[in-house]
Length: 304
Image (tube, rainbow, N blue to C red; front, side, top):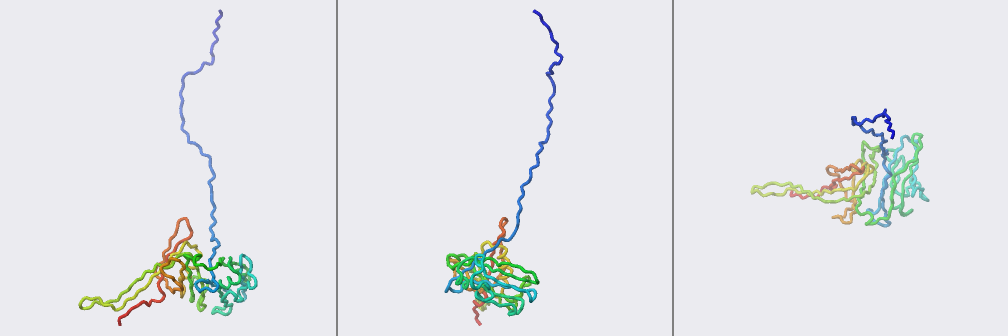
């Protein structure tokens, strides 16, 4: 038996140190998601109603006012239904659809004023989506613009439930407004979702104390306070209602809530007190509560 020893020239090492090194985990950059918001006022539709042979409160109208800069400016007003000129009389200046005061006939000769009586439109062309096309040439610049869209329907007590119609007459000058209403007797209407009412009688007493400590009546007065509670409204309604209608010389209200305490028909009112507005963090529209009193403050009793 032959035994040969072969030397190990690369012996293994059976001992040593292990060291753990703490390192931060590197995060690869991730593109952030971005959302672009384009803020704009969406086209706003106004509801209007008509009823052949019906009373005034069933038939709406709207007023319009335009002005020239110089006398040579021109305007043409065309009534559109579903985007197309109505047949026969699309030109509003004929007066076929309501009052038309042409340039040169108003206290300011550069103004034109007209009203659209929606019963006339309904009788001629029926219900539908209407707007006014304005073709103008002002100081040499031609432009075509459009009014808000008016959704014309047959009047129904059920359809108009929980809506309020405000009618105004304007004279005088609102300095922040582009128009001076002085001497024009400009009429307009606005129908919005909401409820008018919540009557709250307020009594004011004028008395004296007699020698035997009895309270004797001299004069008593009762003033009725009403509240208009709107549904959500956009900035268009805010501008029209708050910065125009509430400053009118005359304000009349019709309420259409089927279960209201009282029927309000062409009630003449006056704005009273502060206006309460409710804003929302995730909604651009707002709610209003507006107080009114009777225009005539004559619920009065005297003992003289």
